[in-house]
Length: 83
Image (tube, rainbow, N blue to C red; front, side, top):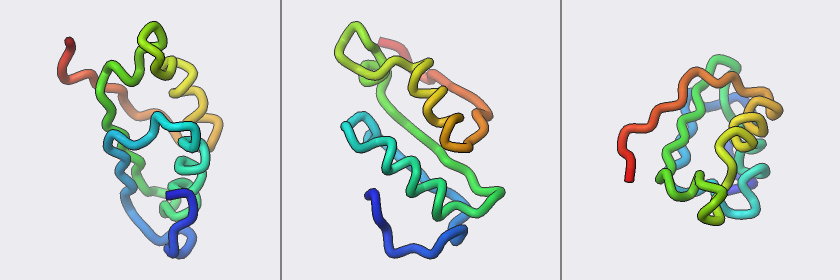
């Protein structure tokens, strides 16, 4: 959701699971940044195919850079399963 009824800096964790590959993902990330406490965590879980530019998905490096440009720090990238 791009506009939640949550107060700024009010949550400890925001989780996006299979939800960020649409055209609105920058606004979702901005909203997460708005509602997360300064020490809060953003957790993103996506299937590998949605981060494969040769398959029409987002480029993982560009996606990571976009997240960092919004003010987040990249703590880790984990690929648990491969197809």
